[in-house]
Image (cartoon, rainbow, N blue to C red; front, side, top):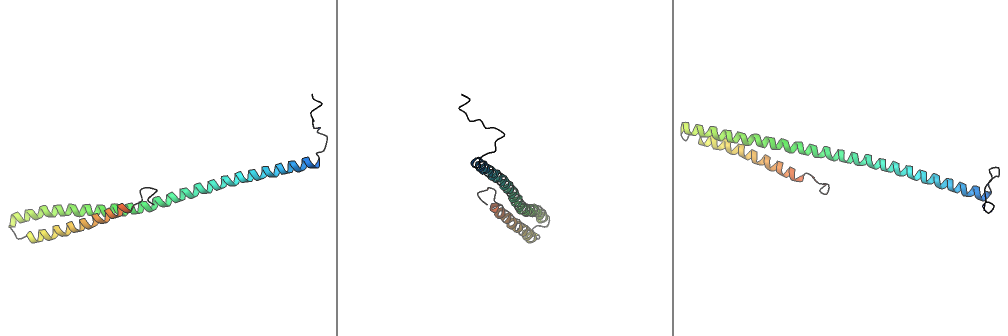
Length: 136
């Protein structure tokens, strides 16, 4: 049984066909190794690019969100001023009977107009924000 099998002897030099086959195996192994290392490098570059993309996207959305919240705050303040003005105007109307009606109407109307314009700007800006990946 053992005589039927060809057992290589370590002292023998490999034949040219065997050395060519082993050289091809080594070249294939090097090629496979270099392909795997190139693949790993590509994945690493892709991961860095994705992280940078989401970082930029977040900074753009944060700037727009800050602007919208600022507009909303201004609108809220103007709306509060309009209510306070209306209350003070009513007090003046009751105390002076009809004199300060025009002044109260003008101040209240202007404050409400500013609050309405700012609120509409904030709502339009909020609708334009890309909240989903499919919206971007």
